[in-house]
Image (cartoon, rainbow, N blue to C red; front, top):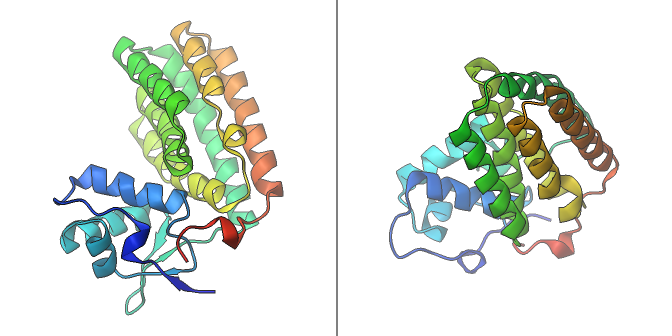
Length: 229
């Protein structure tokens, strides 16, 4: 059943948020399913809810559209995408091919600062208790790892695959400890630090095996667990 997202659903800031912060807050709301595929909203209503300028919200929605999180159509309300099993399977297959190459490249050119950023991100994952933010941080780990590899086209391609994966996790009955445990990411960072490409690839491959198994067999998130609506 369609439902309007109400202003009470989200916390409004007393000042316009920065672009990246606004993007993160909107994405977190989607990944927490406070805004979901049955929610009815407009660019203007979202701007009001997040205490943002309409032009800034338009940019965020465009960015989310490019990441296949939001569907934008002329003369239609924006809406959250709803991925089917085939889309999830294809996305994960493409991720596997891309990420295995990226992790091997990253091991060939370890950067101390990049490894520190990855370790700091793992620490944030460990401490995170909010589902939506945890899913986003888990995705950010894979994107930062891609940047470390030093291949911009491959990293850009992965950037189009991770957000839909995160959305699939959010929309399905997947426990937080199941989809992207920080312990796995910690082990990958350790392998990168030791320049152990074989171990890093093995860990990543097992991780993607597990992610694929739970996503392709999970059930849609029940309506009662959604806050908006």
